[in-house]
Length: 79
Image (cartoon, rainbow, N blue to C red):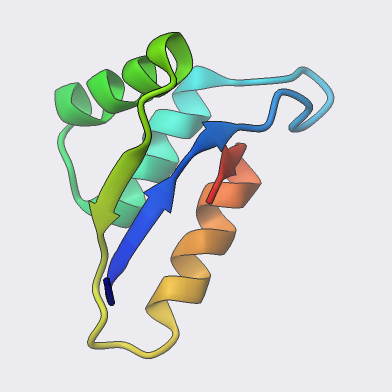
């Protein structure tokens, strides 16, 4: 679907210290506009149970999807 990102996992080797859950939550909140609890629950589900995250993003700006993907990848998500 247009305007939807599917996050399928987390890259365990992001940065020198590995996965930083706080960074994942912040990036997800920034891209989706979700609240803290919703973002935390989504990240926990992804890390603990392998549940993919589907998130709607602003598709009115043509560059938004690629910027969102880049932000999520920088935080450690596999998009």
